[in-house]
Length: 347
Image (cartoon, rainbow, N blue to C red):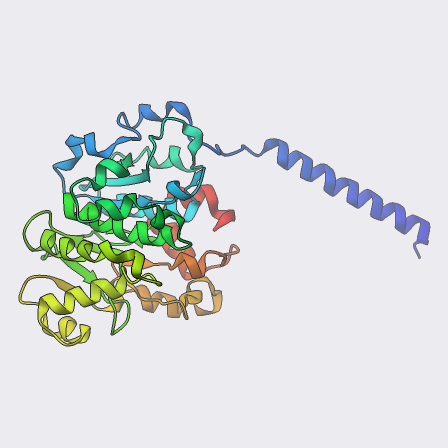
């Protein structure tokens, strides 16, 4: 039988061994870059230049992401899951430009303004471009020029939400293309017979996380109608400029009574609204399925018909894979493999 004294010494020895092992692991672990390295422009020559002056990119119908927190934060952070969304869009659409826009009043001249550990991974993808979105110049001459400049907008607790919803419509109004939220994982090529499209989030509402509008014609007209509503944002207590506004404008344009009628009966070729399974196979009540190993098969069934998966970061942001086979691990491994490999312990 081991004496109490010997047992105590044995415990000390085990603890010392574990501590030594931990120190060695820490020493040999290569730290990830916290801020954007200064030489990243070698991969993207126009890196963080103003998008308004990037005329060579304006010729294309691109896929866009917008990071709109800069007017409200001193440092902008692109997290691994957001980087996953960017990589997945670029891999699924190799012949499209994927443009990530950092919206701000001030030019991004200092790399330390953006905390983006996965930037070196993403700049290796030849169709990914990072640009600065000059808010004052960007909004000039649009229906929301005064709304974006308003102090009331930037003082509101939900001002960031308003700004994000406004900017995606201004972007499509001016340039056309496809807008994606930074929590949307793309699994299939984004090709549609109608360039004006939306996805139903529920049977009553469309989502604003995936929007496609053409640069001219009905797409631009539709975006303008939506933007005209933002003139009155200061009279609204809640964010009514997202799904509710889009749904109202769609139903009006299609001369239908409900969104279901548009989904099933079409809109005379003006636009297309896809069923929930295409873009929004989950909602806030069941997105946890994507993180539950015991519901992996159910997650697979739900995403089997989807082109993209909106991961609802506001709800799922604190949920983790924990190294077990889950729906989110499945799509991360397959559609953003580089970002996932670099962050498998942080998904």
